[in-house]
Image (cartoon, rainbow, N blue to C red; front, top):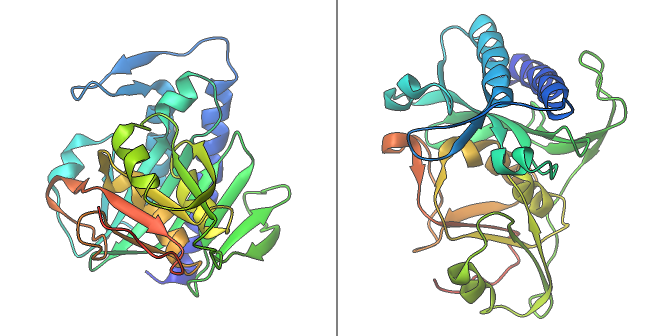
Length: 265
């Protein structure tokens, strides 16, 4: 598999999954179930997962696929794997707040190297090109024909007036305590992996996450941020956040533009 082969496939599958999600989102009602870990799952999660999984397995049958909605995949291991969160921000979806995303990423040797993040209700799409540069695509978002793309890049932050983005559904006192270590011009909340993309475009300088996440929640956003010049490190020791960990669970982390002077946890 080459990056040139990968990018058109994950872009198209993200758009197709987005259509399926919005069809259910705009319906009068949809089913919500509760998984064993008490997190919610909807028919949109399951429909998007089925579509993306089938597409990836058809295109790249030899590459390990890890996806949130297929528990059997969570015990699989590989140096190279595709990792999917078909609907990140399920609570945002259920509450019809719009900040949910489709996430597909490629991980190689512990690092997300390519990925796509699509927010169908917001009409925003971010992905890494084959050469590794991250872009935002605007326009019709046609499945086959790529529209206008704009290369994106992290900010050159002012450490006396930082722009911070944090979780909308998981913003707690520990998060606030860490944010308060910085000189902040503006702090906003956003759902799902969009927070990585806001740092990638320079709309925010820093995204600290003091809370549980899984690798499928972060890999695509991490890839997009890295392709825009950003970094993601562990909250505790500021070493790079790596992937392929046991159970695919993440420690707390910080996503940021490299000009930010990071504070200790």
